[in-house]
Length: 87
Image (tube, rainbow, N blue to C red):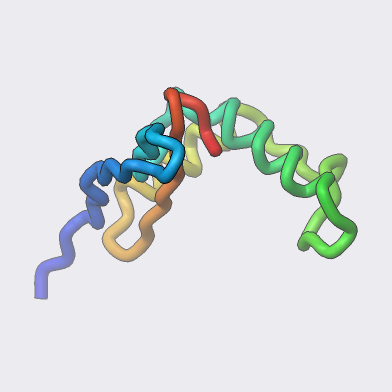
């Protein structure tokens, strides 16, 4: 059986407020924003799996991770964007 890379086609959804949300696989250009978002969400509650200061990956590390997801035969990552901003 031949495995193929898992590719998520962008999906656009119109929200109740009229804005458009785009679900897509993040690309390496999103690496810095993904790290910052992870730090932000980790600081919102004490019940997350880690604290913001425990997030030590570099942008290069995140870029490598995103590339590995895109090249994987059995992994996928989907992010939501509104007005080109990761949400």
